[in-house]
Image (cartoon, rainbow, N blue to C red; front, side, top):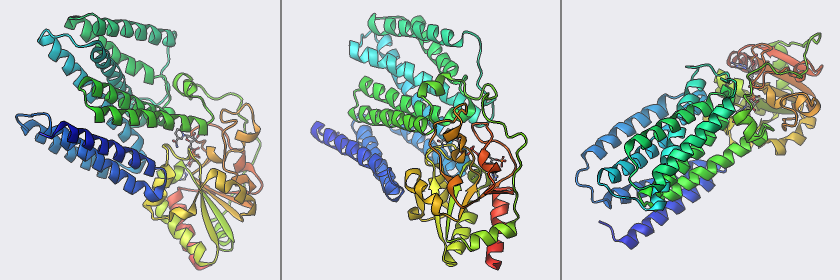
Length: 463
Ligand code: NAP
């Protein structure tokens, strides 16, 4: 056993490590170290907790650790970068599920012994159950939608919001009953758990698959709040602190994503975005696009003094990050400057493009945030748009009827020439036409980004 003062000191050290670790995640240069510091904090917290609980047999704990670590290792290696959002959804669900289990166990423990919890513990227990259950089933639905095991389209029905509100009211009533009235029997507690699980499903089904990253970030926040509640139940300060950190950072991230998409959180949660074909967005009927060839694009890139690459979701789909690095190196060898313009919601998860480009060892100093690079496009010979669509759509500036109106975009259309790499004329996430593709300065280079970039690299070498 550890002396109580030492236990508190070590928990405090763990909490400080979590906070410094989070702070360091702010920049790609320090993120790796930040991750390690947070992991060290977690190790300290786990060891102190395990040593200090007067555990009689460690057998099941060691078995659980072994199975969990093996699964975690396999998942980290096997999951593709494009499947990361659904992997995070599952992990959030597991976090919520653990809080649900711990809080339920505490309730059953007291119930079996005929003991009565103090009001604060009773309230925390029921909140842990409620938020943990919603997080668990909500995350499972988010996973199923993103993995395309169920339709990604919003599932809506008449009176849905009313049904959800009623369900929530019944859950609050049952939860309050269980928390406030001592000795409430199991037949009241079990429906409370079942309805909370159902609420998680009903809250997430009306949300479209493409909005899932925001939902996942929100569920991540919920899993943190559930963990913090569980911390109050089992009186573990470090669990309260780490839960609160996850809870607050998850909600901040959700807000940042919503802001970058120019949507409110309530519009994401209740707007059923993608349920119907968007009205009002301009149609491209009658407009024609200019196409170009690999040879021609290679010449333009080879002689450009400055090229700004705009990566988007399609780059991640094509897994063409290594080919982009090769192209960057070739242009730079010829004296050209290459910059990467990173839109905050390019791709399908926060930091998607940063992670993708880092995987190909593209130096961080070539990556520029939207605000830092937008003024540069005017001086740029070629904006090379690779698998990006919505993040360069000028309708966000000019078309008030567009669903993305008001969203800040990358000024690719201000460049002297724009070369767009995509497979066809399909829309992006927002499902709308992009006038940029019809701009006289724009040349479309159709094909899978990986194949096209491989050919471009070969051609630039010949120029
Ligand atoms: P996007 O608007 O979704 O467009 C991606 C484009 O990539 C598509 O038009 C597609 O056209 C092309 N593409 C797909 N596979 C390709 C391949 N193998 N090779 C070449 N091109 C390919 O992507 P974005 O510009 O990155 O914008 C992201 C969108 O996601 C935004 O609307 C944002 O609001 C939303 N979103 C982002 C987040 C986040 O956290 N990052 C979260 C939620 C929502 P073709 O099929 O014709 O090739």
